[in-house]
Image (tube, rainbow, N blue to C red; front, side, top):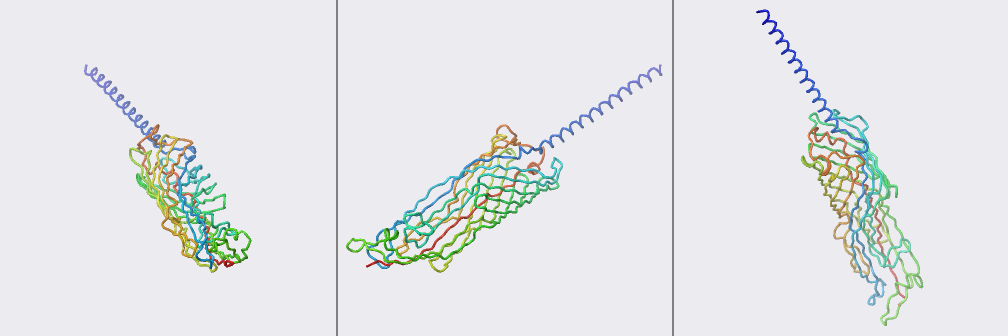
Length: 435
């Protein structure tokens, strides 16, 4: 009997032990499966294809434009020297430049959910960039300068921003995660080229991303081009019976037209035409429950300053201040494929002002401020692959990996190529009537 009970207990104990072992083994398998699943989720959170990192961008940006026109009128009071008095019209408007380009980023070193650093290349090409174009004359009194084509009855000042044309850029960057993966720092170097005009620029940048906050700074240096190309020019001739005589004859006191026997035109010029160097910096922030939204503010300073000079023949060539300003905007991933970047830019580098009589029968540009770069912009970015976060059709939040790790393959933010194309003339002269 005792043997019978002992056998039953032995069998029961074996059954319980086997069940326990089976349960433990099953738990281990579940935990392993869960562990593998979690690892796969982390891997998927940082996985991207070249299509996911390639964008086609199209958009437009508005800029302020300004022009001043001088109109000559007979001077019946002072016939010697025979300067014409001036009447000046000033006009302003808005220009819109279309932009289209492609951007892409590719890792050079392996990057996955366990990598602590990555080396990458980034490039782009298309129609973008800003050419700040200004033409100004001071002391102007003539219908037209025969060598330059500028003068009376023509715009004697114009300031506008045009497209640079087709540009391309290529760069290399490095990013490194912190130990806790909550931040990364990075460094990069880029080269920019404009095919129209042959403008070139290089830059070096640094970035620091911690949590939802992003900090970036880039330093730029323009290469080549014309910088303060100052020339002393002149024109000497007998104006009787030629182009000038048709327009610059003075009225005699009796109302009849007088002739011009001769005179001298003197003018100096300055040309500044090159890619600008300078600095920009950015602070941006994404949001925990709206990872599809990125708000930013950018500041920039371009070294486009020209000192005032007096070469010798004509009057003083006015100087020009550096270009500075900021951007405020937001990027919104509307869908996994479509992103909108909208914002406002303000600039304080191009002359803004009015023309006024200079008291000697001519007119000068009187600068009152700077605003040519002021305007709004709207850019639409189409991603060939997919963005992980989107307002419609994508995630709004995710904590599988840290925010910093998720941004390791984001594109470097930089300013477009900026060109300063400035032409200035300072005029002086004397003309003598036949009276």
